[in-house]
Length: 392
Image 1: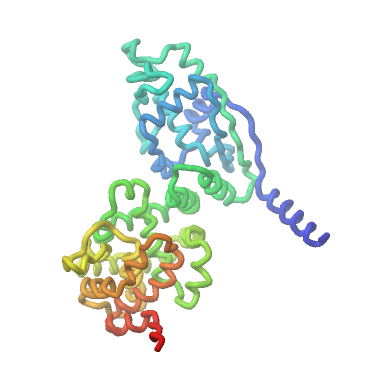
Image 2: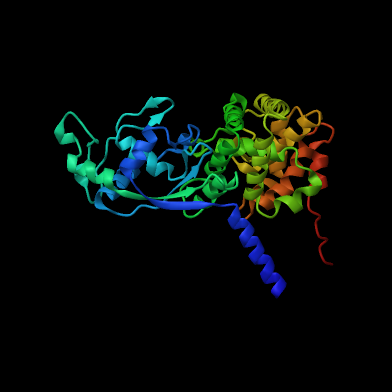
């Protein structure tokens, strides 16, 4: 018992040494001046996650005017003493945009035009300052906003290098509206902005974007980046390690492996880019935008929207074979229809089937059915579950 207690206390002391933090209240006016002076930093890459609606921004201003407390803002102290936003991007960006000082892509955005809210419908159409006095916040209200105190938590420069990104992930996992990929993207930006830009370029590759055909909502939530990362991580995953590695928590595996690739960037980047583009060039010329859809055997046609399960079989399988120099089948859509005919894909996206269980089953299948050296029928028979003999 004493040994176990000593171990946990040692681990706690060690972990605490990796995080050095402080905190105190600062007024909106003080934070705005720090931003103007270049001492409060919002990474340009992070601004891509600034996607609050006009209603959400106006509700924040309503809260400021009514004195409703806001959650803490977290910043990380840089080597030169500057503060970088770790959590609170939406709130800080809204406050800066309200005053007309927010810079994005090198250009100052126009002041935020507010919409009416539940308690303050008269906010409709108003700005911070406007030549038409009737469309401005009053000088008294502007002063109220500037003097509003926000709780600022500072992660000091002597904290461990990856602390701010780990903190960002944790904070945005508690009831946040950010998707898993948006959180992952923020960590990737912090690890290597060059890698993140390279990844975005891959996601824009026409053969890839056209074949997956994601909705505008999924693209806005950066699911295209998640699919590109899934491909980069999983197409070359050792088959004998699938169960022990992927059945635990795939999202954490994707986080860890993505950061690992970003840390090594640009090492392997040319090779990975060649495999990625070759794979989706192949899919574009053989399956176009159909192979990732459901196959309707009655209509003898592919229908519906993008399916993860089909991507996990045909994209990851083809990518593996491209990486190994194995020739690919020249009748991809026929192969896909044959796989659908076995009922495997229906089971793959059935309710209650976990991502981890799907991946363990379908990654090996995809490698077999997309390889020319193995006929699809042979591959399907090899992976089909054994039928029980009926009792006599």
